[in-house]
Length: 427
Ligand SMILES: *[C@@H]1O[C@H](CO)[C@@H](O)[C@H](O)[C@H]1NC(C)=O
Ligand SMILES: *[C@@H]1O[C@H](CO)[C@@H](O)[C@H](O)[C@H]1NC(C)=O
Ligand SMILES: [Fe+2]
Image 1 (cartoon, protein in one colour):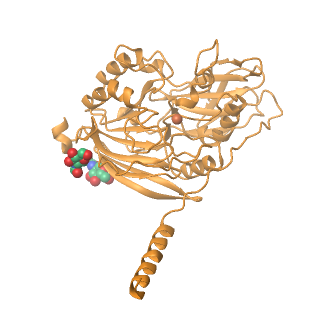
Image 2 (tube, helix red, strand yellow):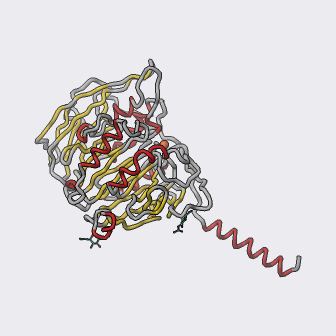
Image 3 (cartoon, helix red, strand yellow):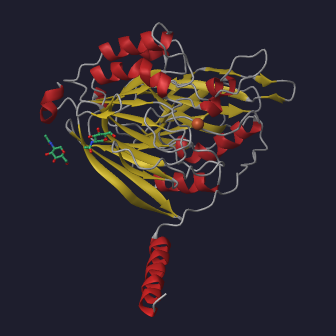
């Protein structure tokens, strides 16, 4: 080889090395945390989380080891509880090796919008006072979106980043605890998320890790008992799919069930048709749908797993002009163009995979090449999503990567509602 060729080869080689080292180095999975039960008092409330019921009520869920009254005292001043309400509790058992604590469920309200409330679960003055913020009754509203959370060191980082943002609600597209049949891990997850989930409503739908199929038992037993969502209020007969309004009805969120029957003729399909028919886009400019297994995905993980659900339901969402479909399952972040039936379509939904909450299985790093041109951004890193619905026409979406321990905005885009004049062709 001529000396000049050798020099050029070495220069190219150094450049390649530099280019590679400039790329963001993916962090390794972090260990599963086990949040121990430190409450010596068996009647002390633990694992408190809240979820919205209608526009002005809140469900409070918590667990006690002892059989205690299901009562919540609350008010707008610390220590001054002007109201209270009672509910019920239930337990479930798993084989002969586990019996859950008493899972309490109390709905409180009506509550003032955009207000700070103080509350206490249970009937003893010695129990801890907690507080939450109610969502606003009009736009703007800030929604945190994060799937496949798990309970590792990365989960903690993601939750810290979400907590540092002034959000009104958290939406979780499935795969919560990764307990995977080990029932005490559901309790550990409940304790891990309590600091955040007792302050802001957490609206969840199920992922594959919630199924926990057991012999002679129905699936989803732990999930349904611990994470009851307002399905009856939306006319659904299953906790596995439901919808709710927020921001005074300006936003409609459809929480679909990737692991419930979805074919035409199924309960979920029939319910979805009627739910979509009720939406009035003049008063509800924004409609979001949440699934677990993505309908569009260029990661090699979980390829085509969402296809059958997409065949069954995509045309319904398309005709209703759903603005965005969020999914999890793939442990990475990906944002698509507006698509319908695998093609760019200006009246289709933007599809976003946000399955990068920080679970024990780690990241899905391998992608299909060449990249399909309907995928606009993809990256396998942990992080979370922020959806700021500003007004009837504009919303801002950003993906915040966990760069080691700092959240950095790594992808962002302005979304224009499909009900707006700007998208006239779709109306
Ligand atoms: C995207 O790719 C498809 C097929 O792979 C092609 O038909 C289409 O023209 C491409 N669109 C753009 C905007 O490049
Ligand atoms: C909606 O918000 C966007 C982004 O902040 C802004 O540009 C637009 O003017 C707002 N529209 C109205 C009607 O206020
Ligand atoms: Fe999953």
